[in-house]
Length: 467
Image 1 (cartoon, rainbow, N blue to C red):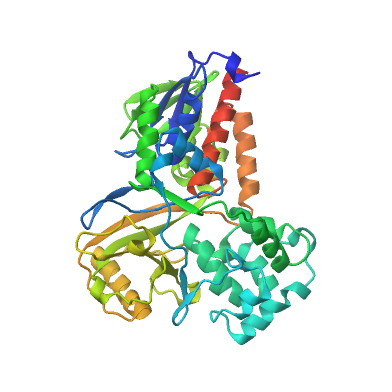
Image 2: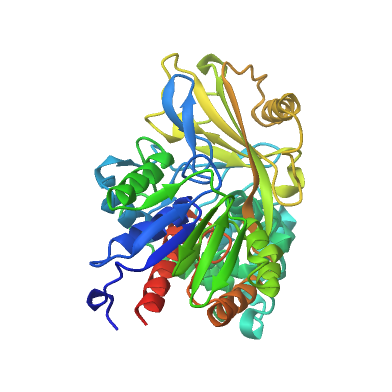
């Protein structure tokens, strides 16, 4: 049945969570010709979830988490255009970055998230030792297993290229995106690598083919000039204008089924819903699903989440090593003590220029298996400065500091994750029809993936309402 022919005005959809997935879900629902009534309930006192920015070092907005989104998948670009931000996007001023391995080395070219696409990309990088390069070069001679074997990123890459390509190239790149340890991470959690592994034959050749298919159609990353929170703010403004009610500081305590509809108990308030979209982190969703179905709640609770700390600080330009012109660097897991990645913000973004001409750095600490968030602010700053001195060779004396803890904010896709989410969606469809899921915990962590999951959840909801 076409949604254009269905009148949803008498239906009520409640979206739980006002992060980018929840906001995008409401946006997609309200774009329909005859949209349902939509309410968002959010436990925090602001919208945006893990997308957040605040004034820093004299600038009006500096991101405290993600500072850009991928342009190669259309979901985020389309949403930005829908809410009038398409003419306010900018891209990194520079594109090269480094890996720190007893010194700063450029990330090799001709790679797909660290997977080499040529012998030259293996042999020309100082990141790998001679023995590591030799082992990686043998990849093209190793028969590929039927079905590519196991759903474990670390095992899959190590079996093809050896330990050094995994630990010094793939793990820093994948791990920095997901705050993960690739030895405990699902292949399916990184679609670009999963696509390579699904092909028969050499991974090097598969990576080479993927690189050749890339089109020179513009920059890889984009962000609003006002920072990533400008996107969530614009979507929020758009859905409110379309009639969406957004209830902040309204945590859901339980969901109860009432014949063909549902009741969400939010403190002293009860909200009736014909359909629900759960756009909250899986671990935080589990408690209020317990009353509805214990097995479903247990599956939500099964998804683990890692915590990270983001420290923004400024370094006087007079201190800055002039040869470091890239956008930042990654630290391989065997060499990590606290810092996992550093973004040279003032190099990366032309509009991040402070009035006193300081260099803005964004320093990431902690990942899955290496929690740091429990340490106090002074200890975290001391660890960050010690690592910066080690990596950069300078005694950093920051003129501004801002510290943000993102506790249990990065879902970890363990091996078998996709199968568990398949089960969760099937079971929800059978036990709790009209409840859909969206967000980073399920089928993709990046901003475009979250928006795409929101669109899928909204479409599923409209189908149920129209049936």
